[in-house]
Image (cartoon, rainbow, N blue to C red):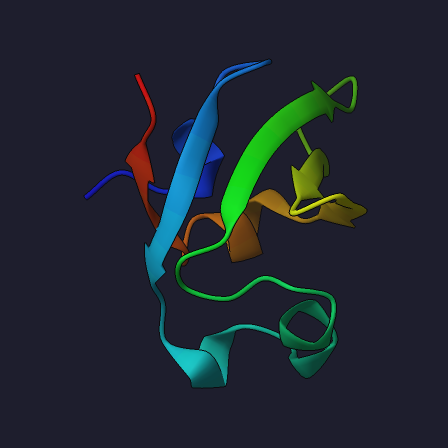
Length: 75
């Protein structure tokens, strides 16, 4: 299973699925939903948090949360 936590800087992917009870409601409200495109913009010095672009919204999420969100890489 490939997750957002596996993305490298600049890589794009489509969100596939995730357990709704493990992802904060705030992320869902900001567009972190299945079918949306996600791009890793930057990581913090110790690789946590991750700075993402999800359908035009910029979000910072913890690596622990990112590891729960399954994706499909866009070639």
